[in-house]
Length: 279
Image 1: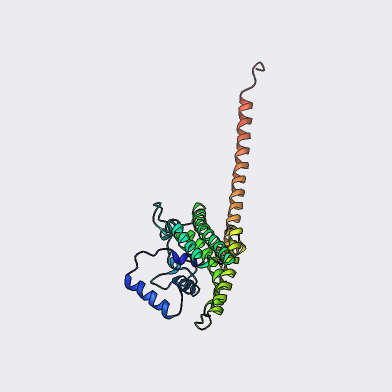
Image 2 (image 1 turned 90 degrees about the vertical axis):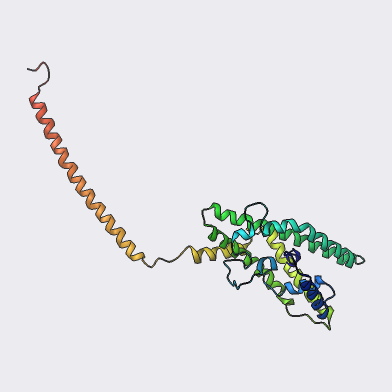
């Protein structure tokens, strides 16, 4: 999930960059990569999904994407969806070069890191596609923009929530005096998260049992509500049925009366007009 932390966030002032480098050095991190991974473990969402000026502690909206326009403005260019697509090649190149430089002599470690990068890239892109198609699915089924985005948001909440639960084992384990222990915990948390990511990828997100469960609960809570007036409605239906039966009886009586009258008229016409050749 840390791959999302490497996407651009717009302009960053030089003072902010210097401060980040200084704090990174003071806390004992050997590189910005380590610092970003460590900081990402503290949060439920990556910055691009969760960074916001306000407090939005609700599963019905992603903190940084409160409306679908923030994800995709439908102009083919603006929105986080397109930002992820445009920046992915740069992020992959950046991390690939770092893996080759740092782990070059260590073939097995390099291979594991490359596999993790490949899966993280695939996860980010397929999650992006899932968000787009899931929102469009609800819109095509007749839901309003807000309701469709709520249903997509609760799914994304669940996905990042599961990843956070796996990585929480390394949340507060940083020990500057024991870097081996800290590294082992970060690796363990990362691999546990990758196991979750692999399950979502194999189920293509929307077929994952967790997505079905969270949608069922959300729909039950918001669209299937108990009817407190059920008894009154039954009585009203019974009254309507009774009224229809009364109307039916009235119409039947009128019909019978009219039929008798018609027979009488036919009888008079037959008596007053004998058939030809009989007179």
